[in-house]
Image (cartoon, rainbow, N blue to C red):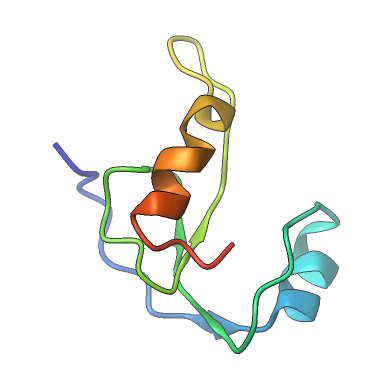
Length: 72
């Protein structure tokens, strides 16, 4: 089941993402469309943020998110 969080359509470049978060991200072309923390979501063109949690670690799902079309 995908997240119940409303769809995020914010657009941003790779540089803007790095500046805003101070994090790291593989380079991507163009603009990202939305930010997601659920690798089961419709990720095409969006950015998947891998968060560690009590039960799951989002880093374990990066390959899945990429396969579902995440831009970064």
